[in-house]
Image 1 (spheres, rainbow, N blue to C red):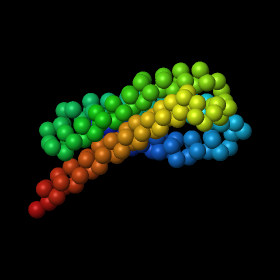
Image 2: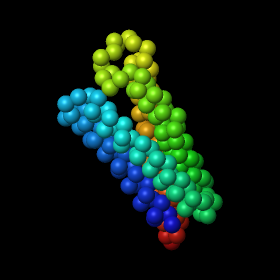
Image 3: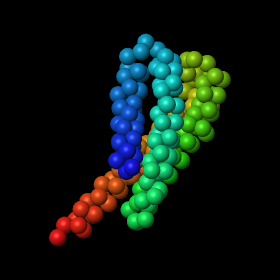
Length: 159
């Protein structure tokens, strides 16, 4: 079961890393309008957040019967952090960003830099990025905890 959990976690981290380092920057660099890039990224982010929540929850459930060691509890804690981060970004921050986008119109750059709505949008965007970063780091901690536990088990069984 842990193999399946690790496979899911690694796949999600890879997808989230690809999105943050390649897809989002490419969208803003290549599309003719920032509004189009924002719309594209806004369609992909919910998939990243919801899949991260589901994958962390599945890994936690798959690990539950084996969570007897301190390292396994660390892994469980990291998975809970990943779940909270993804859920917060998707269900608390995301709707506020969507609401602001609807109020501001499609071209955010048309607003003055000191416009309160534009500043709030920038802050919410930074918060969303922070939650995604936390989810990625927590998932990497969960994967690392498993690797350390496997290494310790292998060392303990070697005469």
